Structure formats: structure tokens, C-alpha cells
Image 1: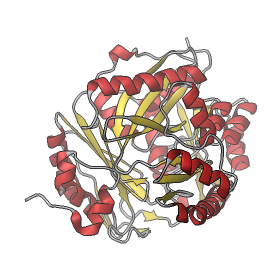
Image 2 (image 1 turned 120 degrees about the vertical axis):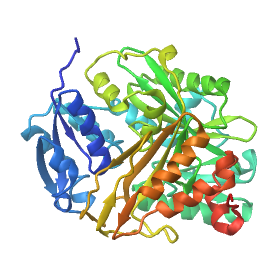
Image 3 (image 1 turned 180 degrees about the horizontal axis):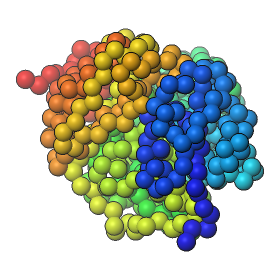
Length: 456
């Protein structure tokens, strides 16, 4: 018997992740409440929810980031819990605290843990104390150029400056020479201040050709924690992920066990509960280093679900109910290979947004194909939010088959009226380096620079 009952959940999000959470709630017999902006009145998450409430005007600051409006909607509809999804308020310690103060369960970790892991400098310190490998760098935010020079002399060039309060490439600068340090430091601080209202930055050693590997963890409120293996998130553009895979061709079973054990131990050390993701940089020599922890569900969670058969949202809700995990580590098996392509409403060459009306829309089917989306024919993609409109996920016994399956699914996915990244993903599927698994985070940079080779 669970220690707290959850019969109704407010989903504090929009788009495909709101629909995704709704799927599991419906299977669990849990009622759902959708919140939406004026621009999303006709959105699928609004249509499919048991109840829906408009919380403001189209801009995010006046709707999906409007904490008083969301809490009011939760109280009016008498929900038991709030699921934040990803983005927006998913990693807001304030939102989590207010939810709990209003006796509404926040489906995620405790507010103090969100705060701890949201501060990248504090997260580095915490992880280092928990035995997680970290890159050499500054133990505290950099106050001035003199501090930066001191750290630079200790760790050497190249180095990278990062925003302490955020991610996604904003407030991030690579510095290869001492003469560039002062200017790049000021630029990073200004970007961080503009993006996160916090100009604090820190410095780390820069790895030239890493892979971006993350470990999915699940932890309950009773001290139990497991990992669900890794995801390969190396294919990125300007630090924004384009596609993800599970498992990674670069990870041996021994290394998977090692990285997973490190992540599980860290969760137990800090008293983490619910779903979370540890993001690591993997060097060419097999060394791995902590980057950050995401205290929420990830965009790319479906690839893990496909190869493990775990429903991560289901586990999030059960943990929020106070229940113990159903799985032990030895129960987790990784079967086959999964790939996810993020389908964005963007020009595939210029990467500029392409909002507008979708005049034709066809979802591919067939064996091993999953599509997470909130799009439908005649849907109008609004210009106010993130450009991702769908996630196309495939699963097969081998990576080679998964690539062929993804190419087939991309060719059969029809979205007309706007531009999308489908043509870009087809190019990636045909790239020899992607097919061989021999790539780094510089993949897109090299491909766009004209160095890519296309398979015959």
C-alpha cells in the first residue's frame, strides 16, 4: 500500500511531454489536468486531459513559467500531485517548494536537491565528495580575470568557461590561449547573466573530442537506487542534442557497470529520489567525467524505455506515491538498440525556426517504431516555444538494423507546410562516421564543414 495516494495529476507542461505523461497516467487510472496558454487552446494535451485550465497569454513568462497561475489551477482542480515534465519549471526549486507547501506532491526530487544540483559549481563539489570523477577546474565561481588566470595556469589550455546556473551552451566559451581569456570570460559572464539572471561562471579543462554519455537512474524514498544503462547523446549542434541512442557503441559492459555504480552511489550519498540523469564526458582513453545532473525526466528517455521496457514516468509516479522500486539492478536487461531523432520545426540548413500551419502530417509505423508528438494535421506550430514538435524513436535487435529502420521511418514521416529537421537526420543516417560509431561531439561541426563522407 502506498504511503500517499495520487488520484489526480496536474501536468505543468505542454507538447509531446505533456501527452507522454498523460499516457501513463491514463494507464494507471489517474485523472489528469492540463494547463495551457492562449496559444495552446487547441493543443492535443488539452484535448486528451480530463480537465484543462488556461493559465495565461502565449509567452512562457505569462503562462508555463507563471507559478501562481499553475498553483491556482492545481488548487482549483484539487489535484494530488504536479508533474513538471522537462524544461519550464521542471528544475525550479521554488516551484517544487511552493507545491509542497500547498500540500501538492511534486513529482521529482526534494527542493533542496534540485537547488544543489542546479548550481553547477555546488554540484561539482557534491559529486567530487561522493566519489564521482570530475574534470580539473575551479572549485568556486570565478570572480575576476586574476582568478581565471590562476586556475588556467593550474589546469592548462584549452579550457572551457561555463555558466554556473544553466546549460544548453549559453554562457559557455572555449579558450585556447591566455590572451583570449579576459575577453571570453566577460562574454560568458554577460551571456550567463542574460540567460539565467546569474552571471556566475566556472572553469574546467576542455576535452577536444569527447563523447557525451548519460546514465539514467531511478531512486525511491527508501534508499533503493538503480541505473538503466547509458544513452549516447554525442550528436549535437551548438551543445543542443539532435539524436540519441541506447546503448552506446563506445561503452563496454564493464564500463557501463562502472559508470552506473558511480551514479547510483552518488544518488544514495545525496539522498536522491525519483528519476534523474547523470551526464558525463567520455574521453578517448575511456576516462569519464561528471558534467551535470538533470533532476527530471529527459527528452531522450524513450530510448532507455525501448531497450529496458521500463516506463520511466510510471516509476516517477510510484516513487512520488512513496512506493519502493519494483526492480533490482540485476533485473535490468538491455535488449537491442534504440535511436531517437528530434524532429524540430526548423530550417534543416539554417537552423532557424519554422512555425506555421502543418498542412499534411503522417506518422510512420511498422515494427519497432514509436512517435512521441502532440502534432496533428492542420495544427499551427506557435512561435513562442521550443521548436521540437516530435520525437521519432526506433528499436531493433542490432544498431545496423536500427539505422536502416530509422532511415525508413524518416522517409515515411510526412510533415508539410513548415520546414523540419527530417532531411538533416537522413544525412546523419547516411554518414559513414555515424554508421561506424566513430564520432565525437564535433560530428556536426565536421559534417557542416564539408568533411562528411556519405555511404554509397
